[in-house]
Structure formats: C-alpha cells, structure tokens
Length: 65
Figure 1 (cartoon, helix red, strand yellow):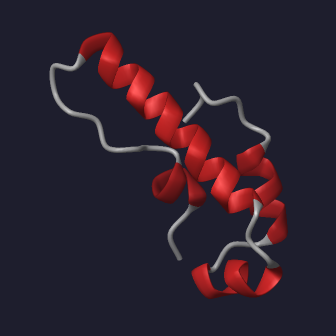
Figure 2: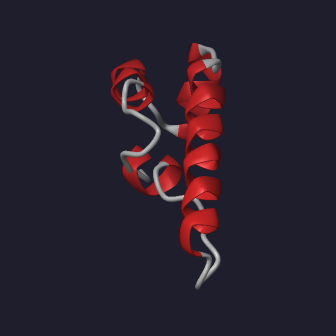
C-alpha cells in the first residue's frame, strides 16, 4: 500500500523553478488535500486509505509535505 506521504505530499516540481516552483507545489498540495477530504468511504477504500490517514493528511498545513 502506498502511503499518503508518497502519494499526496510530494507534487511534481520543475527543476530550477525557485520560488515559482515552490508556490506551484504548495498550491498543488493544497488542492490534493482538499480533493482527498471530499472522498467518501468507498473511494478511500478503493485507494487503500483509512479515514484516520485522511484526517492526518488533511490537517497538515499546505507547506508541510
């Protein structure tokens, strides 16, 4: 099972992007966590994520991987 740390916390970044790359990563991470928070139990089971894992992930601030 993939962990949420690997699945949702590390959005793709272009090399050499500097602050723009960092901002894109933060926005993407925030969107992924928002989308994850909207998933129902069936969808979470399909991707192998528990409700506890979900809560732990969506409570993180956007800057924390």
